Image (cartoon, rainbow, N blue to C red; front, top):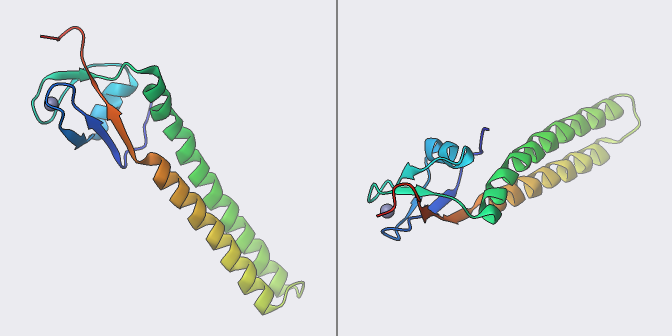
Length: 129
Ligand SMILES: [Zn+2]
């Protein structure tokens, strides 16, 4: 399962350091595998179902961003064509364009905000000391 990469941190159960999770570490979490802490190199895993659900919801967040981009581009094209055929004045078209871009920026900002996660990682059971 592919996971969106940006802004996800993990807190180590062994050394309590917080570090940015690399894509391969996120992949390990996604397939429920243990992985070493990048600071103290002891094995970690994510077993809290609530946090796992949160990680998985990032996929739909990426989809939301992509579909919003397509929607905004379509709306801009429609506004442009409507201006060409005389259904909209230039000022109305500019207003329409600004509103569409604003909506896109709000969605991107929301997605970015939701992506800022710090996972509380646990010691992997098989490798616990
Ligand atoms: Zn550690």
